[in-house]
Image 1: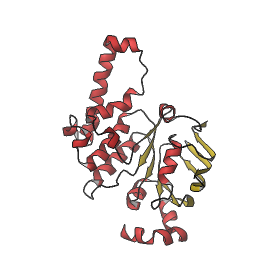
Image 2: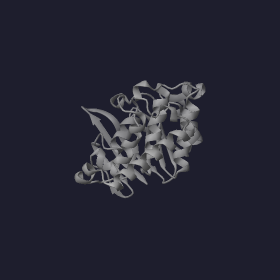
Image 3: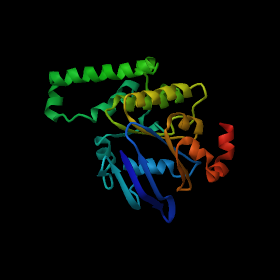
Image 4: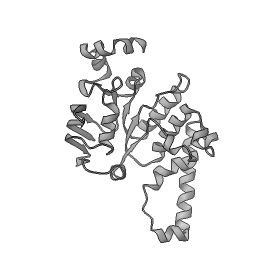
Length: 253
């Protein structure tokens, strides 16, 4: 579904990504692990159009994504979550979920201004869908809260709820457990399972190796922009170079 071919990304002579190639199969979960500065989020930003690679190719369902703006890539079916939601903190939770759905529909300004009956029905349907998603995740009580009023771990769950509400078949999860407590992580794990059960393809970046390997059928390990190993979680964690770099992290679980 996604082909990353020999991608490099330079920032002023510093290589954030150094000739990395990856392949993500449809309907599967693919994990990216690595320490800070490994290039994990930089890779997600290249796929989602935030950054343009210095060299290489990125193809989604056979179509090149290079040169496309983030909204154009999103319209092609690539959704993502964010490490920080500060820019959305004034949104009501329910409205935040609806953002992902409104981008899926094209509506003339005139029809929107007239509040055409079909638009009102669609809005009711979308609000019902968003509410059902919050119910599934056990956080419906926050629907009318502003994001800034919601606990941090729940914010991370709400961001996954947003992509669950979207029609995106391909989802990039950027550090979904970062800053969360051990008590909050099972709910985030269940939300990822819902994405996969819904037939979505998922690429997950996270510092929690156990979390990633619990869900991802294939894993890639990066360090300072270089691909160290790729394969099943067992193969990658058994790799001598990966073990040397991650020894403390793997032992800590």
